[in-house]
Each structure stands twice: as C-alpha cells, then as structure tokens.
Amino acid sequence: MSDGVAVHVIDDDPVIRDSLEILLATEGFNPRVYASAAKFLEQLETLDDGCIVTDLRMPGMTGIELLEKLQELQIDLPAVVITGDGDRALALQAMKAGATSILEKPFDVADLIACVRVALADKANSPAREDAKAAFAARLTTLSVEERQVFQGMIAGQTSRTIAGRMGSSQRIVDLHRSTVMLKMQARDLSELLRMALAAGEEVLMETKGSESAAMQSRANPPKES
Image (cartoon, rainbow, N blue to C red; front, top):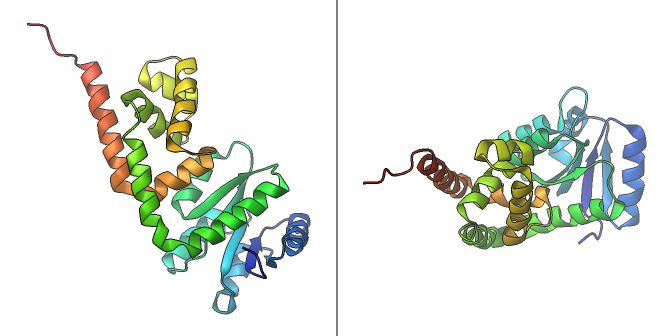
C-alpha cells in the first residue's frame, strides 16, 4: 500500500527529514515533513489521512507527547516511532501512547518502509483487530508459568538480568525463556511483541500478571507437609 498515501514525517533534524522525504517519495508515498511536533499540530485541520513517522526525542514536544495529544484529540493516525539505542523504557511508553511500530537507530531502509506499510495496513484492517486480540490471548495460554513471568518482564522493558533476579533464576535460563516466548507468541521482535500485547488490552495482560503473581506466591509459601 503506497499509491500516494500521505506519510507525515516529524523530526527536528533537517538531514533526516530530507532523507526520509526522498526515500518515501521513491517508494510511491506522499511525504509531508515537519520540523517539530508543534508544526505538525498546526496543520491538523488540513492533514491528509495516512500515518506518522516521528522521532522520539525532540526539543519541545516529544514524540510520546505528540502521540498522547493525538489520543486526547481522538485522532486516529497510526505512528512509527524512531528511537535511539537503549531507549527501551521510552519505547514502551510510546507503544502505550499508540505507536504501531518502534524503529531503533540505526535502522535499515527496508525496515522503515515495512513499518510504514504495517501501520497503514493496521489502520485499514480495523475489523481484524478483534480476531488478532483473541489469537494473542490464546497464544498466551500456551506459556508456562516461568515463561509468563519472563513475558511480563519483557513487555515492562526489563533486561534478562533484572528478570532473572526477580525470578530467582539465572540469566541463561531467562534468555532461553525469552526465545521460547517470542516463538510461541509469533513475534518477530520485541517491538512487535509490545504492539500485540498492548493491542490485546489490559484485561488480557492483567490475567497473565495475576497468574504470575499467584505462582510467585506459591513458591514463596510452599504448602507444609502434614
């Protein structure tokens, strides 16, 4: 899907703006560039439908604040958020604020185009979201207790070391569980796992968290032998 669809690029770096404008135009999109989130918001009333590609860290209003503002205004524009290396916690905030995909610098051109296409397809296929939510919930039930604990840590942006400390396990075991979680949940990367988890809704995630808490309490207070 391209055919002149508008892609709104928001970045304070003119070199990146110009590069993305040329790249997106070459792929058949209709790029619109803005030097700041404020400049983008000034044009809201006349914007063409499409999607957003925005940097996470910008002077003034950040990418997360922009997405939160769009949510407040009830404007449904799927967004691809570009982050720096190590911005995992902020990336999670961006997903909660409505980002469709997270792209970490430095990124491959093909990955950016793929993220834009996914964002546009997600908007076009809104009726399919409920089916995807049900499928995700079903896959969650295939996780073991330990895998669910690792899953919760992953979507909270925790490292394997932190998760291992919380579980009383080794980092190697946690890394193995992470791989299994990605396989069972059919997620290509952490960004996709976060997107699927947030799309599933709080009730699904809270159910998983409840199972995890019960398991941890059971281990902490094992039944006494009679």
